[in-house]
Every structure is written in C-alpha cells, then in structure tokens.
Length: 130
Image 1 (cartoon, rainbow, N blue to C red):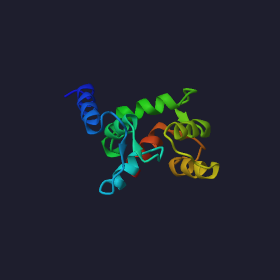
Image 2 (image 1 turned 135 degrees about the vertical axis):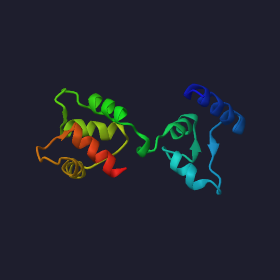
Image 3 (image 1 turned 180 degrees about the vertical axis):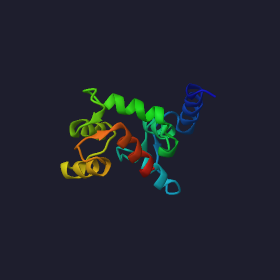
Image 4 (image 1 turned 120 degrees about the horizontal axis):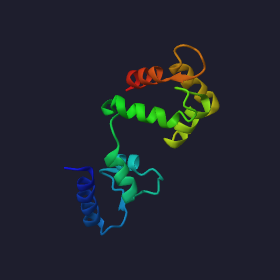
C-alpha cells in the first residue's frame, strides 16, 4: 500500500471519527493524544494526526536518508556541519536549545575536536543514540 493510499484511508477514518472536527482528548488515551497534540490545545488536528502517523522510529532511518538530511543542512557544501547549520537543523526539527546545550551537542558528536560535525561523525552519533 502506498503512503498516499494509507493517508487517504487514515483521513477517511479521521473524518468518520468526529465529522472531520479535531478529536478531543479523553482520559483513556490522554497520554498518547497529549504527545501528538503539539500545540497543546487538547485537540488533535489532521495535521498533528498525519505527522504522528508518519513519524519514523530513529532505528528505522536509513543511511541514505541521513545522507540526504546531512547534505541539505550542509549549506556551504563543506562536508561538515558548523554551529549555525546544526542550530538551523535543531530549529527546523522543533528543538529549542540554549547555546550552551547546542555547544554540548556539537562537542558530543565532534570526535576529532575540530569544532564541526563531519558526515561520519554525524552517522556515528545518530546510530549510537538510537
């Protein structure tokens, strides 16, 4: 089944569940719904529901997908991610990190201590943390 067909079926279920209106959080599934409810309005919109459906387990991410992400973040094409590029990646991923925590993150991944994260360091850090 293609991703599009899967999403179409999920959207139909979503529409039937509450007439297309956002789903409300009930006590039985509250914890799960609150995790999906990114804006914390206690309603699950289609966009939030779709994003949760398509969320991927970090252990299932392929090397090719990581290479694509790395290249898209490496704006200067240097083959390494500098602090600004890592910061942009974190912001685009919805992570709000202090400069101190960002420096710690880079230092943890920067195995050769050059102040940047090379592709192999990026891969090693990803696979060691998932």
